[in-house]
Image 1 (cartoon, rainbow, N blue to C red):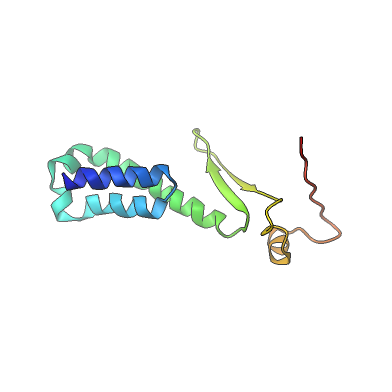
Image 2: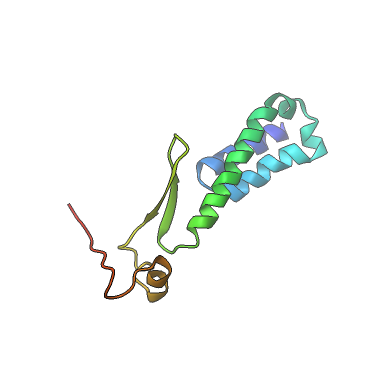
Length: 115
């Protein structure tokens, strides 16, 4: 069944953090007449909607983190999120990124802590 294949592909994309691909696949299941009329989508509709919403949230989070070079957004099981910066990443050491993050030369110092 094609709808089931698209659903599995979208779930794999969601698990891999490819939120745009996941959203497109899940949305097509809900929008295209040939899919939303199928027994599979009728039976799985609530789950598909929840997964599409998770993909939407992932897209928004990834788009926000993309504004900051060297940043990664992670989400905890409790729904909270964290924006993490890798200060050893060469992208963060550039003047544009330092300005974006408010790391003004002479006033802010970031040191690496290695164990």
